[in-house]
Amino acid sequence: MTVHLLGVGPGDPELLTLRAARLLGRAEAVVHDRLIGPDVLGYASPTAERYDVGKTPGHPGPTQRDINELLVQLGARLDCVVRVKGGDPTVFGRGAEEVEACHRAGIRTEVVPGITSSIAGPTAAGVSLTRRGTASGFCVVTAHQDPRSDPVKWSALAHSGLTIVVLMGARGAPRVADALLGAGMQADTPVAVVTSATLPEQQTCRTALGDLGTTPLRAPSVIVIGDVAAAEASLLAEEVLSGDPQGPGTPGVAGVAQPGVGCTGTRHLAIPHVAGTPPG
Image 1 (cartoon, rainbow, N blue to C red):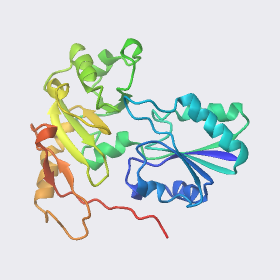
Image 2 (cartoon, rainbow, N blue to C red):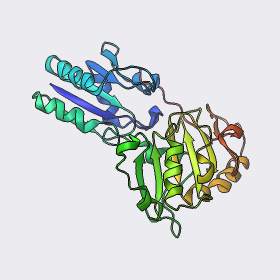
Image 3 (cartoon, helix red, strand yellow):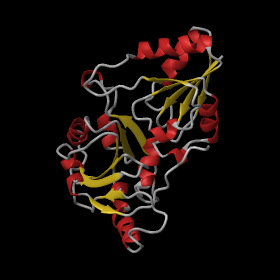
Image 4 (cartoon, helix red, strand yellow):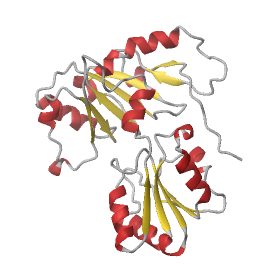
């Protein structure tokens, strides 16, 4: 009897690991979050019990304690329980809490790493988080924090020279911008926001830190703050525009806003996206 915590990546089912796909196919029960798409869930056994424990912002939903108890209950009666999480289960996924709850109940667990959106999102948009001579490292933070107890040292980040990647930042972007600006980061610092990364509806907008707080954003979004956020903008646009805008075999179109244009002014460019089809 084992509860498997699967990281299923940023959304594109083609980015599932082989281990994740195999476990989904063996699962007797699948417990998944709100943003797990049907293409990913399509890998699950058709006979598996399914439990949607997703939380919708601003609406009541299962608590983390509820989810922990469900995993323990399922793990006590089934041989293969799969807990599906976007990205990697240990990156702001509360995976450690769920593992601890299972261990306290004597339930075995396995954590299967996934491709975190903090890296996949920028990469899918043509943004390199590190770049020789520009950024020698990056840090990942979440904007989904209680402002009264936010442990992030924004003043240190503002002067670190690192690329800052913000997850779950659509609603918290104004607070992040205010914190970094208040710590002395320049208002013209480039920012890239990648929404629905790796999916056909992916969009990227480019803005500046001083405008981030007033830029309309929607979830799920990955925010990249630093010089690398602008470094690839013109190159990406040139590469896409030089090719066939609707090349053969391109089932999806992603949107990329031109430098200096906000999300509302997104210009749609053809960026190849391969849609995954579950086997069988």
